[in-house]
Length: 244
Length: 244
DNA sequence: ATGCCGGACTGATCGACATCAGCATCCGGG
DNA sequence: CCCGGATGCTGATGTCGATCAGTCCGGCAT
Image 1 (cartoon, rainbow over the protein chains, first blue to last red):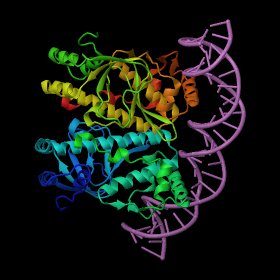
Image 2 (cartoon, chains in turn yellow, green, red, brown):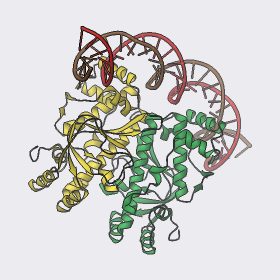
Image 3 (cartoon, protein in one colour):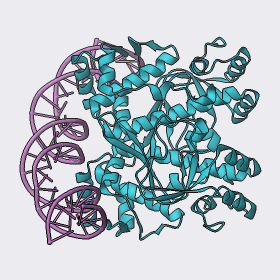
């Protein structure tokens, strides 16, 4: 069990709202119904309805969409502290699939639990709403990248964004982070071929910017990478007045 | 003034929930604070806070993001019946700009009005929530297109989606619709150059699929276009159990 | 040990789309 | 009336990244 106040979700939300003991306790209560899923089998499927939502406690997940020609576009990756299928439980419909990349541990959250928790602490509701809006902003940023950034910039931006997210939940620092993503997954997220992902990674390594090897991302030149990617973390950690 | 029950928003929502007279009246009340904006000047700006939300009554709008190199990625277009800046009013922050393409007419909606209206009729709240989730699904679909579809398919998909949306508010039919978008706007939405947009349009015209000329989109071969684009309108008009 | 499989990695070739440059038309303003 | 700006359109050239066709390596099952 993860101790109160140390769950990834609590860490993440805590970075934006100072949570009281009582609020932390309510958050911890949401972690009661613990489950484990193995890599590779979809949790939530396109079109299916009436599914539960989950808080990811451990492991990595990706949300993807399948196209007619069999190709796949990964919309987003989820890391510990992220919600899975939050929209699908609120709106009773899902437009994409959710698949664990590694074996994962999640806490199942029923819509009612969430609503009850929100009723008890509006600040928590605001924090969760903020997290949801941050996810949307990331999707928009991702869209802009696919449309208008070239491959190295896209990759650099992606690795930086991921680093920022991981740091928030204590899974990395300015020097780098562990990352179980394969080059195929990167390709499907960035709209590239796996072959080209490989070349782009080599290019960035040769330039002395980042190294991605053996499941570890190492920032060799953080400022240089930020400059290349035109990375602005504002959309990740901007704190809306709602939470003040 | 638009008569009760005939506003684009009422038409759109009415296609998914049968709205009662009372609900239509509440909806009409939201249209009271009427305003006009000219083309070209931003309504909502990146980073700014404390803005109002609007319901678009007439005209076309685009939501875009500016990148460091000066290029622009259009995230979505809004047509009558769509909300503008709904998220920015709920979350008091905006991550992209909203700019009218034509002169537009909008109804300003304050957060409180909306919350009051929702309190009176939960069905209306559900319908609006459904509309918001449909918008998100469109963004995800757009993202998948940018990542994994080639230019003609992207264009075809885009024109079909737009046609479906316009039909919902009575601004088009299976044969086509009027469309004030320039080839530059299409380029920035589809992640192409304006030059290439022109060639793609010619290609589709030569193939006898669609014609886009003089501000009018004409479907010359609707089934053929659907086949090319792998267009599935499910994500546009699927009706969640919430609304049953 | 042997074979298999998934993942990282590489060279050669090809094509889709960008970029550059230029022309034609329309329209509103001085 | 002419001018400049916006938009549509086209050809020539260049390039980024896809595709094809492999090799190499480590882990795992037979």
